[in-house]
Structures are given as structure tokens and as C-alpha cells.
Length: 221
Image (cartoon, rainbow, N blue to C red; front, side):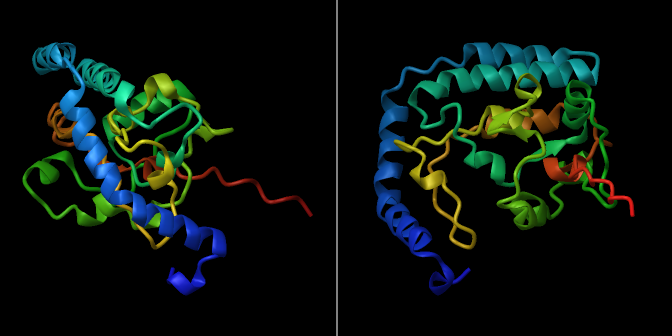
């Protein structure tokens, strides 16, 4: 979307976002330095996951570790209940996580043909299309109901570790075609473990690939 195609409200929002990016990055660096985080609980849960003999148990332990990591970051993050901008961006999960979400929601998991396997991802296959997920940007998560996550306790690792370190939600507000540099907390370690502890034959995809929109039945003539 070109600048000329924006509504006056969108154009003003983009202007405010651009002006706030630098200060947001500086704030993120400052609060991370000053915040006394202790990730010992996260590390212990990941150690338990490493030795677990079943994938389902490993995944649950990784999810618990992701939540423990998030508990440490939450006090300095802009994220609050009711802010669901991140529920409208691409979210990459594993098929193992998708099955846990299916159990919690009663929905069926669908695997998109040609989905990248964990083995190929780890070996370094090109996953740029997967990580960018442009077709999913702006599309609400299938589990977003009335502004809240309907499977919060079973949400994937990516959601448990996604925190903006800006002062408020200004930079999170999506204007299609105008990405913003949001200072997110770095959860690379937990994300890598979520994939590394998943069986090689499992696949990766956006949450919307595994749970596409439910088609409403056509009205009877």
C-alpha cells in the first residue's frame, strides 16, 4: 500500500510510528540492562525437556519454559491483555504444537502439502517464505475470539515469547505495506529449543495453515 493510498488516520499513524522507532529501541536497550531477570527456571525446564523420552512431554516442557521466560520479560514489556496486534501477524508453529492446540480446541489439524519438515529447517533449507508469511499478515489468528486468545493455556511457544519492549502498543498497530521496527525481546534460545526438541519428521507452518478458516455452509435454496 503506497503512502497516497492510506487513509488520513493511517498516514498519521505511520508518521507517529516512524518518529517513535528510535526512542523505542533505546528504551528496550535500557530496560533490558536495568531489569534483574533470572532465567534459571527456564533453563531447568529446558534441561528436563532435553532428557524427556516422549515428544509430547518434551513439547509441554518447552512450552512451560517459554512461559517461564515470558514471566521474566512481562514486567518490562508493553504487552497487556486486550492488546492483540500480534494475533494478526505470521506465527510459525510446529505440527506437534498444532496437535496440542487441537486437543484443547476440538479443532482438526490440517497439514499443508509441501510443508517444510523440521529436518530440512535444521539443515538450513530456505525458509524465508515461511518466516515472512506475507499472505497471513493482517489475518486474525483462528483462535482469537472477542479480542482474546481462546486457547491461552495451550498457545504455542512463539506466542509465549513474543514481547514488545516499546513503551506502549503504538509500534504494534499494523498498517498493511508499512512494516515497523518493533523492539522485540530476543527469545531465540527458546524458539530454537522448541524446534530442536521436535521430531525431525514433523512440519512447520503458520498457525493459519494448520487451522484454516472454517467454511460456513452455503444457504439452502
